Length: 99
Image 1 (cartoon, helix red, strand yellow):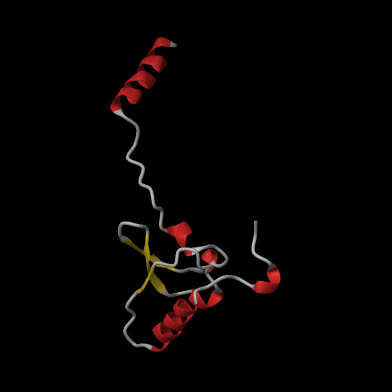
Image 2: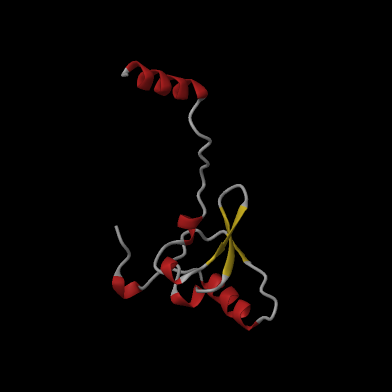
């Protein structure tokens, strides 16, 4: 279920403070955050984040296309290593049998 419109998008207050500080600071050190549930607002465009995925921090720079999405959408928590070699052999045998 979506969030009520009258409430507005959810963004951690501490994250908003860090973004304001980032914009005034001359050093552009990425902001470390664990708040994957925070919504990206237009103030975040051009800001670099390090989003925690449960294991490591994923570097992300916010663009205009990301506004309205959650920070966690851009830092996947699961890695796909591919299928086992046995599955690949089975696929190649099926395609050769059809000829």
